[in-house]
Length: 169
Image (cartoon, rainbow, N blue to C red; front, side, top):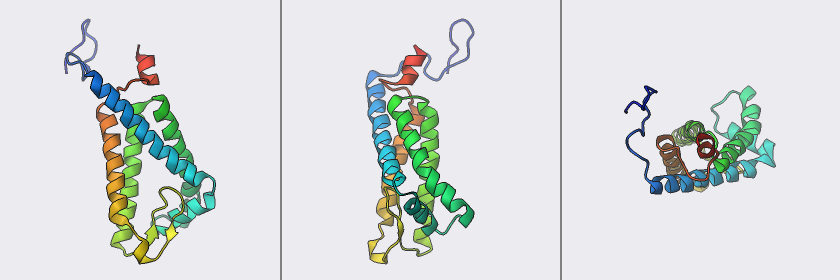
């Protein structure tokens, strides 16, 4: 980090411009993660009881939190999608996305380790299923891929066609 002229605080990119390809790649990553959150939220928002049932199936949360989480999660996912599409608060949204994805990965791993046969409910549906229908490893790998996208945006939140860029200029 280097100090800015005039004694202002140091910035991580001072002296090293961010390559244009990095900003375009960040835009693709940002919009890709927005599609994931939008798809997940829209798939669940039409049936909040089913979303709550998916949360209940993990057998992790106390019953008093199942409905608030199940009913609220689709709205959070849609809010993250909207903020990513617009490009507003990209680093913060990426951080929230990363935490949420880590929670999802931990929940899936916990169900797998405890021998609970569930559909994750990540993109609608969810709940108990036959053991032959579980795809824990694939779900964990998929969410790890999404976590890598969020990690990229945490590292390089500056993207093209974003409200953050417009506000900074």
